[in-house]
Image (cartoon, rainbow, N blue to C red; front, side):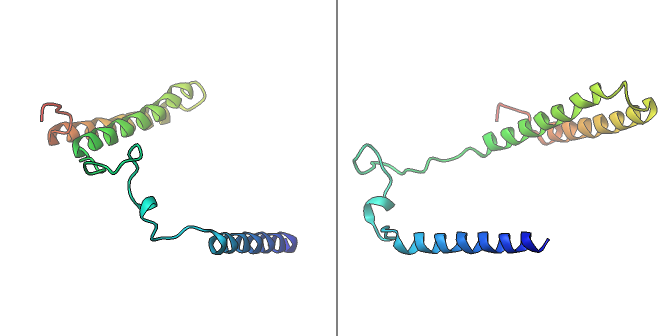
Amino acid sequence: MFSIIIMATILITIASIVMILASTLSKKTLTDREKCSPFECGFDPKSSSRLPFSLRFFLITIIFLIFDVEIALILPMILIISVSNLLVWTSTSTIFIIILIIGLYHEWNQGMLNWSN
């Protein structure tokens, strides 16, 4: 146990020394105008480099991610039906699917699934 603490201390010390040396010996400057400006084929950009981001697209992506994770949780439930207690499996699956249906109804009721907005 004591040797693990010594090794961890040595590793943290070496890593800290390397990080401090790298930051002090690096030749970068924070006020370099060329590095701070956006790069566009070697020319100055003609318009803003930031494009407006659609919040609607972000929300649809989050909904897709949630349902994707839910599918990944449902698939193992099918595989363990033969090795688990049928009553416990049925009640757990039913509660999980009811929660999913309530979440889907809430998203539908809030208008999150309409593409025509």
